Image: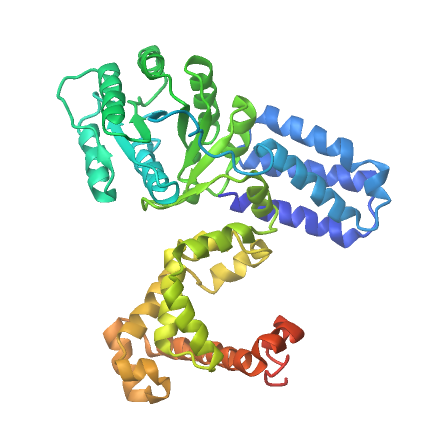
Length: 457
């Protein structure tokens, strides 16, 4: 999400930085480009106007124009206003403080990803919050909608309310709450019906369920790829049903991201969660400050570290640390690192979190560095014998041809992988030579070619 906006804003700010001292006209010209970039990213016009006016008011002041680093000051002002537009500082989180069972109403149009999102939230509450969760489908109109949720429940090992054919939505909701009270559930997720468009019948049905269960959260699920339409949907649901928070789905497939910027502003309700992939664990909290950092190419190292902490197995990490301390790093270790990247959502899932990655995006694309490459490398390593993985020096010409055929790749691909392993292995040896104190003293420069113990150029 936000790739195109991030790229365009990066280009605008790069031009500002090259100027050194700034005039009021420089700032105005930059803001005109920022305005166009926001509109092209599908941000609603009223939101853009208000944003640019607020930034201009501060950016053309004497504090900025006479600053030692005026361009950086403009970037900071844009960053601060982006954070504000997206809802302030940290992630708001779901309201779970009510006495259990806490009802959460999932609302939105058909096709927005409500049912899958219900299962994703249930898994998150079960694994992270240690909550006992019950899911119930109130969608009696769409064929097999209730069975779809039941199937997701079986897949995720989350309880779902038994289906009673012909039971109306309000009755299902009441039965779900009664069951949850009797069986000591903490949270009840109610997946309501949707339509392909907003109509009075849909709103009346959702409102009647809301009145019957009095939910702690009415979470609007909206598809980020619907752009401007998502804003109209959010406005209608907020006015007629009452929205307490927003969950955006398919943000991994939308390069523009304008819906996120607009919906928060139009409804006044926080974006609480974002779906970042098809897998049931592909769900993140929405942190306005971190997202603003990603948009402006500053990265989001905090989220990257959190994501790594969630997926790294402590025992494996300790084994690798012990091997690194001895200067050893074989192809089995490399395969584990590649699998770690896959667990963290692939290269696409972590790229936006790395500072300055926007400027390298074109080079990454031209070098064809993507998740297919990771899968290809894993296939190559899998086609080697255990002895070859432990000792890559054994892999000579005839073996390389055999490995290429076995992995469905070329000898050139095998050569590239072995060269990459050599580089990683060399860096590991440098770390072991430096030791912990030495690494702290020399810093990361010691790991660069020509720096520390690296070969001189």
